[in-house]
Length: 364
Ligand code: ZN
Ligand code: ZN
Image (cartoon, rainbow, N blue to C red; front, side):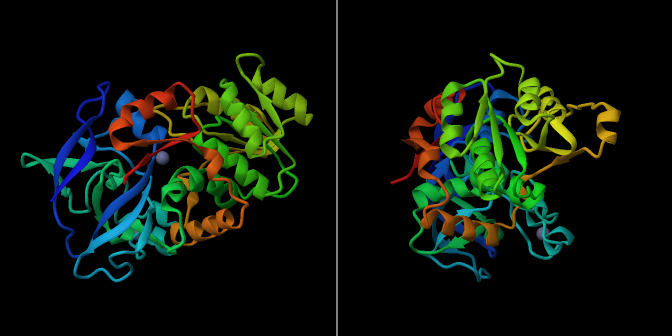
């Protein structure tokens, strides 16, 4: 079959909307018709070269939701017509990490741009086209392993719920699943884009007392307050480490880095109090390193990573949806703009200009 998809052929060039050939799902795969897809920095990082995509050309997009259209012969967990949210990490359910409660670190699938056997279902003139995170949501349709999709209830508003697969779970999960922020904690969040705003929401759910938002963009700081931040710092105006230590009389219990730069991760670490924890959520450029003062570390400080909110998507997506349906998770406030697939480059421009919390591609 044919599908229109947003394809990256070369870094530093605009993404091109191409008509691609899409194969039918194989035995344990599903064909999904997209409803919504979030514009995430991680995909733009392939465009601007912050991350090397590995294989090109690439159908972008790892955050999305849709409706199952067709299933392979051995698929058992979903049927045509079911609503799903993409996990962005396929979960085999049997490897050591899956069994141990860390399915987003599944070793059967890994984080590749192909199916586990190295093939891809998209092609153009018989040349393979790869899929971002093995998903490829900037596309009218995609084929993914059954293990990538999480079935959700029929009353799920998919055009909004697409954000749960990356921005929401990565932010809230890093607070609740990974750092396990305790009630009354002080928290600082460096970077208030789609993920950072959800670190703030997660901190509210954890009953953090002080939540300090750090960003150079005033629009994002305003959003941060809407999501529950109690204080804001613009590093263009104030040294964030000094300001955080000042507000909290000695540093925060938890500092989250949600931008993806070693310099900012260092600031996050330095803004923790003795006994505090710095959490790296942002995707750093490959081969970068940070160094910390050993005496600072000795004072019971921790520096930890949090990948994809340390999520159990089949469980976490359900309670996040319940929080939304009962009015406690703010998804609507995260969505600044909706655009058709054909405006994917403009959506990236809005994100880079800091004009939006999150943009969503809508598929009618
Ligand atoms: Zn993402
Ligand atoms: Zn696994």
